[in-house]
Length: 352
Image 1: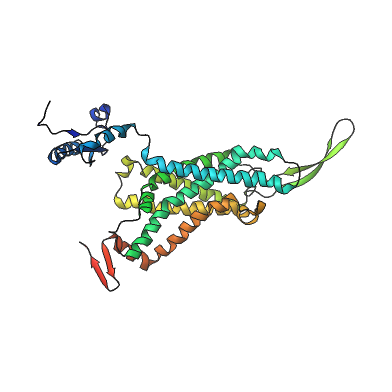
Image 2: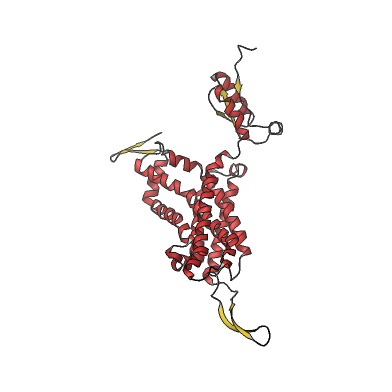
């Protein structure tokens, strides 16, 4: 019907309401067309409206653009799968260690009462271990990328595909860690008693009480009397844990486009990187102080505790980060990221 027209596909990712009310400023608007000049005209129109044009290539990508608004959190797919796999692993591991192994090693009829902890205590353990593992996984790819840049002596070479994908999921992994940390904190408050948090309180005193039963007979029962005052180590551990959660919340807020846009690049880097590492260190200290006895003494069925396994990746991440903090190393890395290229040992090139 219009053989001389130049067709361009765009604006499918914006609603009429957003256009009318000037919402979603800076949002990507995908463009597809077979005529570069026409694409440029539409891209300029998109920029003038306050949005960001994104070239999708030829008109054959039109169907793909139409499906974008119907996708459900496409960038979260990998992070959600990773989170679920890690959480299920820690929950099943806790079930096997703390309920099944306890009955196996007792050499007595199975105590079904220990399974009452499955829905709350084990769930909370899995939340804590999954959260700190995801937090470590948020910062570990950046450390690996730094070592790779130091080895290559340049920032202009491509990262391996697996590392590049990992780097692109850091925001989602960090937000998932924040959500699990919040839920872990809420459940921990409901469980804040000497019965559940044995490592945070002194061991109970065992009293022998003679209880009168039917008739004139009586029985001797063991009664546990808990001290409701927490140990000093536990007080410090809970404090740094709350501090870690507070910092994570601040980092999550700065991830919002409207908040991040109001920060300078240095401020944004300070919040996302410097404070993020502070949150990871605080979380490691929190788990170490509260779970030291579990990590050192609790080896039911000759297996380490879930807390000890959950500390492996954070500890590795922190240890790998430490050499990068050495002034000579950090300055050289900053120079490489600033454009310095080390072609050979005796030749250094500075790109404009």
